[in-house]
Amino acid sequence: MKKTVWLASWFPNENDPLVGDFIKRHAEAVSLLQPVHVIHVEKRKSASETIETTDPVFSSLTCVIKYYSVWYLAGIERLYSYLYSLWLYHSLIKTFIKKNGKPAFLHIHVSLRCGWVALYYKLVHKIPYIITEHNAGFMPAAKLYNKEVVNYFNYLPLKFIFKNAFTVTTVSEALADALQQTFDLKKPEVVYNVVNTSIFFPPIQPYENRKPVFLHISTLTPQKNPEQMLAAFSILRQQYKTDFVLHIVGPQKPHLLRLCDELNINDCIQWHEETNQQNLAAFMHQADALVLYSRFESFGCVNIEAMASGLPVIASGLDVFKEYLEDGVTARFAKPENPADLARVIHLFINTPRLSAKSIADHANTFNYKTIGEKFMQVYQRINQANDL
Image (cartoon, rainbow, N blue to C red; front, side, top):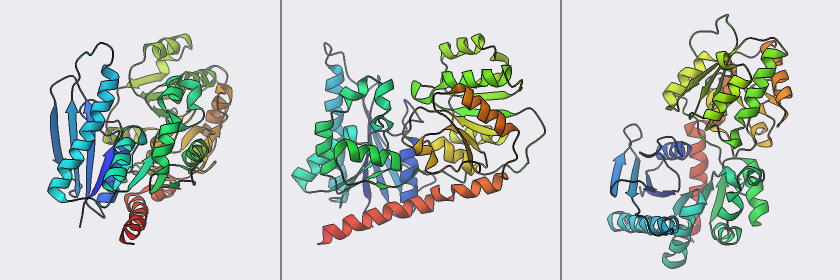
């Protein structure tokens, strides 16, 4: 069986083992049904190196990561790095073809870099490509919080990349709608993100009688809205006279530490460094609910990891979250940009009975490896049939 070649603009690497981990889980799901060969290019300060590995758990998944470095080039090193990375992707595809023959198609994850390479291979070598888009930067609200988005997503060239794809899939209906409106596309097909249920599953022991324990996991960027989340917990303590513990897993942000001091909730917050999924699962087993008060998302993988762990979610009422979280069953929704309402919802959650952990976890079956892998195989079948015509 021929390997499916993936070009991943984001992928776990030595600089950041967590970036693009959702793409790796997509690859793991597909590799259970068909061999997958992932190519990723990453800049680093040390010498260039190519590392090829076979996943120790998913034996049909191979990953090639090309590390490269860029010297100071009088202010143009960023542009040079971008163009050089495209050439490296091209070089790695050529190497793959020499060893394995021409692939039936390329599968692109995140269009910004790899889309250009795929477009070249379609126009010059007649190899079609599929795009799976994950990037929350395409969501309309992203422009409000990231001034680079308007310039970074040069819509005219990207429209050409999307229009030439055999098909486009996204990880949510919300992202599909955003791409359709921005690039005047046929609405992309939705293939959700994956949760690894061998890592995330309900706790064996039931919840103990103790003060409420909440969990927040994110990069703590403006997208994730940590300031208003902390303001809500301050209201919860001062107005509702509720004691609690909030575990925050993410990078250290000095301004958030100062904010907790100003809000007089320092003694309620426990900070933890970014960590792997096994440790996140342990945090979820200790909590009563996950809190994710994002301003915008393309999906929100931590939500389905919570669900699979039997952990309810308290979230901002974004359309993307309402696609797969059910109010009053697996989640409670608060009005976006409204810390007082978030505090009210948290207080209501504390005082309302909820489903058992197993009942919540059952709702995560939509996102398991088998379901998502089969959805991608249906897409692959269509492109293979078109190639045979």
